[in-house]
Length: 292
Ligand SMILES: NC(=O)c1ccc[n+]([C@@H]2O[C@H](COP(=O)([O-])OP(=O)(O)OC[C@H]3O[C@@H](n4cnc5c(N)ncnc54)[C@H](OP(=O)(O)O)[C@@H]3O)[C@@H](O)[C@H]2O)c1
Image (tube, rainbow, N blue to C red):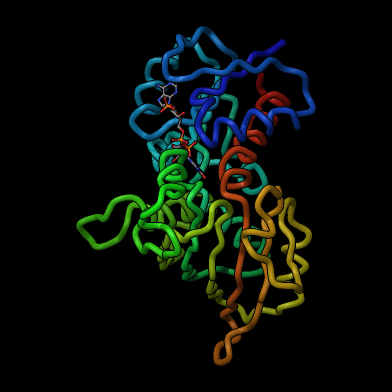
């Protein structure tokens, strides 16, 4: 039986992934690793660690772990590393792949609603403003949120990650470059604005999307509803309501008042599930089916 490790098993993503692994239909063995543990030879492992730890661990483990799935941002834009959402670009994994990056949580929700439209619409531009949950920042941020006097208490904080010299936050740059890579749309213009809000879990985004063609709203809804793990809701959907669910939800779809080739909508999804652990689980399922 194949053995798959979870490295960083005590973090928010690592703990969620332990439960997600129970949904995999193929039998395999799971081994859990924290910071102090030695990691033996494994068939595959998911690194639920931050950038610097992932970079170091990938280098150290590449000779003794068959396949590595990394949750951090470190390798995501490396042209040699596929950045994979199984519903969108599973073909990016080839028989030669050994390291796979799982995308940023906010980008994942966004591209889940863009990808289904690509067969019918040439997408040109996307603007989004995110309302990102505290759990997206890891267990330390969640602990900090629960201490009185936290900056995030009753608040919206318009900076996620680090502020870059060009005025963007690192989170916003992920939204631009990861979207282009996952969708293989190097020319698509992305206008991101990312905000941390006082919501414990589940991200949401307001999105404005522009295509070459005029949008037909009923067609957009059907394309979304036909896509795996994505649903259009005629009712409004809120992060609190969908926290713990595997589906990505879109709602409030409307055509721009002046330009028929622009739509506006709202999305909500669980950042720890589709934005992280569910995506990793789907990648491991795919590896078990095809390559392990
Ligand atoms: N949270 C999200 O919604 C989300 C979404 C998408 C991607 N991600 C990415 O997923 C990764 C994990 O995020 P998270 O939210 O789970 O963070 P977290 O709650 O801070 O968990 C990180 C875990 O990694 C452990 N760790 C650090 N170095 C290690 C090492 N050398 N060996 C084994 N374990 C080690 C930490 O151990 P200690 O407990 O000892 O510190 C901690 O338990 C990050 O790269 C993050 O950017 C997160």
